Length: 281
Image (cartoon, rainbow, N blue to C red; front, side):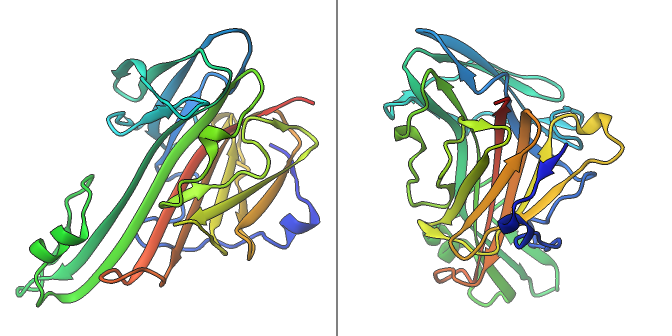
C-alpha cells in the first residue's frame, strides 16, 4: 500500500498510545470489521453483500464471527432497512442489503455504556456490567458498591460502520447524531478517489476530538511481508486527511481517551471502526 502523506498529514503522524481496554492494535491483534462487496453501485436497485468478522488479519476471517444482533441499516431518506439473509458462520457473519432508494446507506452498530472496575474486600478485581452488556447510570448506582475500593468508572463509546451508495452519494443518512463517537465526513465516504485528498472529522458527543489515534490498513495485508500500517492523529479540529495512491478497500480504526466524562464516570474512551473503498480516478 502506498499512501502519499500531505504536509498536514506529516505533522499528524503519531506514536502508539495505550488506551486501557481499547488498546491500540498491532498487526497481530484481533481487529473487527464489516466489509461490503462494494460501496458504489448503479441502477434502479441493487444488492450488496457483507462479511463481518473479528480477525488477526484485515479482511481475512480467521478468528471468530462478529455478531449481527446490534447492527442496523439506514436508507438515504433516514428509514430503517432490514438486513437480509443473515447468517453466522464459523469465522465470519454474512448478510445482504437491498438498495432500492437512490443515495447513501449507512450500516452500523453503536454502543455507549458506563463501565466500572474495582476491588472487593478480599482484593479481587471486579467489573460491571458483564462483557457485551450495556450499563446505565441508574444500574450503576444499584449494582456497584458505594464503598468499592480503587473504583474507576469509564464512559465507553464504540461505533462500527460502513457506507454504500446507489447512484449519486447523499448526505441525510450520514449526518452525525451528536451521541457517542462518530465520523463527521468532510469528503463523502463513498466518493473517494486515488490522487485526491480525502478529509474526515471525528467527534465525540457532538464535539471535535483532538489527538484521536488512527490506524489505516489497505486490503491484502495477508499477502504483504510489511503490513504497511499508517498511523495518524486528529488535529485541534478533530480532522485528518489522506491522499490515497492505490485503489481498493481500507480498514480504519480510531481510538480516543480523555478526562472529560460526566459523573459518575472519570474517563471517556471511544473506538471507531469503518471500511472505505477508494476508486481509481
